[in-house]
Amino acid sequence: MADLRFRVVAEAFAAMERVTARTQLMLTLVKLFKATPPEVIDKVVYIIQGKLAPDWKDVPELGIGEKLLIKAIALAYKASESTVERLFKSIGDLGEAAERVARQYRAKRRGRGMGLDAFMGVEEEALTVNRVYNTLLRIAQAQGEGSRDIKLRLLAGLLAEADPLEAKYIVRFIEGRLRVGIGDATVLDALAVAYGGGAHAREIVERAYNLMADLGYIARLLVERGVEALKEIHPRDGVPIRPMLAERGRDPEEVLRKVGGRALVEYKYDGERAQIHKRGDEVVIFSRRLENITRMYPDVVEMVRRSVRAGEAIVEGEIVAIDPDTMELKPFQELMHRKRKHDIHKIMREVPVAVFLFEMLYRDGEDLTGMPLPERRKRLLDSIQPEETFRLAEYMETGDPQELWSFFLKAVEDGAEGVMVKALHSQSYYVAGVRGWLWVKIKKDYKSEMIDTVDLVVVGAFYGKGKRGGKLSSLLMAAYNPETDTFRTVCKVATGFTDEELEKMQDMLKPLIIPHKHPRVDSKMEPDVWIEPSIVAEILGAELTLSPMHTCCYNRAKTGVGISIRFPRFIRWRPDKRPEDATTEEELYEMYRRQLRRIEEEAVQAG
Ligand code: ATP
Image (cartoon, rainbow, N blue to C red; front, side):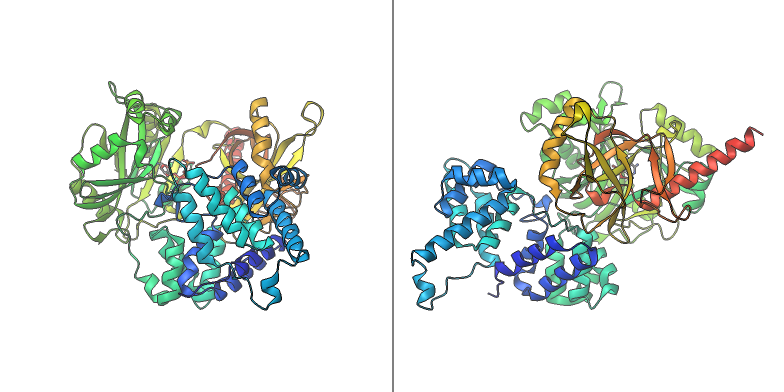
């Protein structure tokens, strides 16, 4: 079977660490993909994503902590654990420490004439992608008694075969931080260029990925069967679809206009989004991030078995914590207890839930995503035998802003977060993976000046002064631009962190520090350290302002300035969001425009 030397992948990673522009990042990836035979392109894509399979596939974690990793490095290169540890402490990166130990080991072997094979002209066998991937998979699959030793042996064996550069990236992969910072968007771009005939194929590749959230599979299909095969992709039971997302709005009249007049208005529940796949009695639930969360909701599985009448179906809804006696909605935080690993049946009784359905994407072999919303709803209604805790989201249909507003107030009073306003026209398709104006959310924090919180990505950090001296205590935050796949800065956040939060933040940021600005970051500010864009935080501010220091919406509202947030305050981390799920530049621009309009209205009212 055709294979690829792992060295080629390691060299691409090394090159990507050096580049400073996103296009270079993408071109390095194109080169790597072109060098990769079709048989292993899926594995190469997973490795780039830092995974062995898509999250929803439930491949076990590698289960190798820092200690075991150090042991394996020591074992592979006949060094003492304390030597590896000391090097690690002084460099601050275990991948580089492994690289150095490996290099010393090679030099020593050569010095002692142990490289006899090489001397005799027999080359050591080169490490391949298959060998690396399959060994990592075996490490992950080793479970139960004695598995620690098996993992150690497998890993030490793999490292012993690796050259120093390869060792560096194997170690980093195991630590879960390759630090090459490639998002899905870059992979999609590179695949389109390498195998789709150019950037114009990007849309097709992306659509396929949105309908079948397995980037490795999509890559392989593209390489083996071409763009045409991707056009034929339909949702398939068991493979999650990337969720459709909403734009945000405020003014009912404007929102109705945006969705084309009449709309379906539903409660926006504050719970966990669930994409539920059913085949016969088999039920799988995926989260918003498309992780398999079935284990957390055995009660929902039962509800689906009882209530969904189709043999095969994919439906979406929001799982919400409730008071079963009154059916009152409880806040999102309540649901988090379900994340506990043990005794799910006890927690299930303590935190009862209800499911409010709002979508049907697939039914008995029929792909519904290309149908307008009224058609999808008809099928959803036909397929559900509702129960008190498993039913459609509260809804109404209207074209009247006044009616919409009354419904919004009722939703908030009932404990919902606001409403979702959804287009009903002939093109109101389910557009997987896309945030668009077919769905608009109106949320209740409309009273605060800034209307709404935003979710921003940490791209840099500054050391504090005084009591916070020596600690990273303010963060440079950025919004996402999906068109350019870059992060552009909005503000510096230094308030809202408790002392405890601050301590935790140090550990969280340290491994993400990179030596130069990330190629996907656009910033005028120079923070004390640059951070790989990967963590999202929810931020609230007093209002949006214009600032020459920030690059978000630069030159858009006014020449020479960008949009920033005044008095930004940290609210909470959003581990459920990837950096690409952060608030977009466009959303901030819309928020700024709405703020301007409000100020103007107030000025007119004040006479
Ligand atoms: P937020 O940060 O407001 O939760 P988001 O970025 O996760 O938003 P949006 O598309 O902006 O996602 O808002 C839609 C989210 O609201 C969905 O992901 C879902 O979890 C939730 N939701 C609650 N009720 C509904 C509903 N009736 N229709 C669609 N989504 C709903």
